Image 1 (spheres, helix red, strand yellow):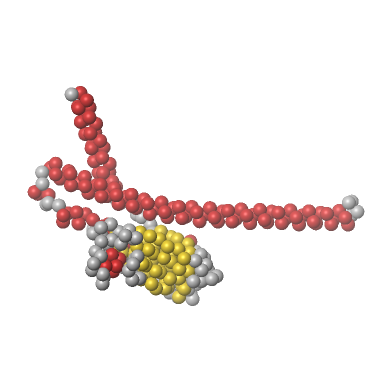
Image 2 (image 1 turned 90 degrees about the horizontal axis):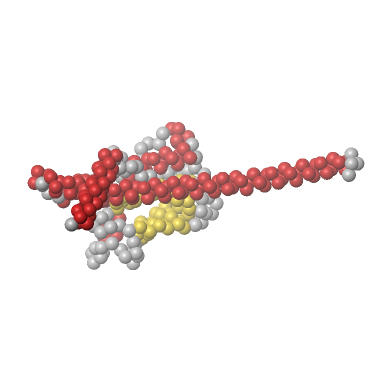
Length: 280
C-alpha cells in the first residue's frame, strides 16, 4: 500500500513539474529562429533533404548573396527573411521591404537584382521537378505549398514522398563562391493555436480537468516548436562558428608565413651587412 502511495505521489509531482514548465514556456513566448545560411563553392552543388509530416504542408524562402558581401548586408537580409518566415509577423510570406539607402550603398550596383548564375532545384523522387530557376542577387525566391505542388497532377500519391524533398543549390560560377539563405516553414507552425482550437470542444463545454488537459496538449506542441526553433538556431550558430574558425585559421597561416618571411629577410640583410664589414 505504501509503495502504491509513493508511486502515485511521484506521478503527481512529475505531472505538476511538467505543467509548471509548460506554463513557463507559454508565458515566455516562442523564441525567434533564424534562417540557415550555407556556402556553395565555385562550380559546386550542395543539396539538402527534408520531410514534411502527414497532413501538413510547407513554404520555402531562398535568397542568394555573393560570398564577399559585407556582414552588415548579410545580417540585414537574414533579419528580413526571419520576419518573412516568423509566424504572427506582419510580413509573413510577403516580399522584402525596401532596401535602405545605407544597405544599398554597400551593394555593388551591377549585382543588385542581377543574374547570379546560381540555380535552385527542388525535386521529389520519381516525380517531375517542382522548381528549377536561377537566382537573382538579393531577390527572394518563395515556394508556396510544396506538398500541394508535388501532388498536383499525381492524384494516386496523396501521402508524403518516401524519399522526402530535395533542395539543391548549383553554383555555375567558376570564380566566385556564393551564400544562400533559406528557411522552411511548416504549415502546422502557422496559426497553430487556431488550428487546435478548431479541433477541440469549446471551453464552455469542458470541465476544469479537461481544460487543463487541453492546455497541456497546447503546451506540449509549443515545446515541440521550441525544439525546432532551437535546432535551427543551433545550425545557424554552428555555421557562424565554423566560418569564424576558418577565418582565424587562415589568418594564423598568413601570420606564420609573414613572420617566416620577415625572419628570412632579416637574416639575409644581417649576413650581407656583416660580410661588407668583413666581420664574417
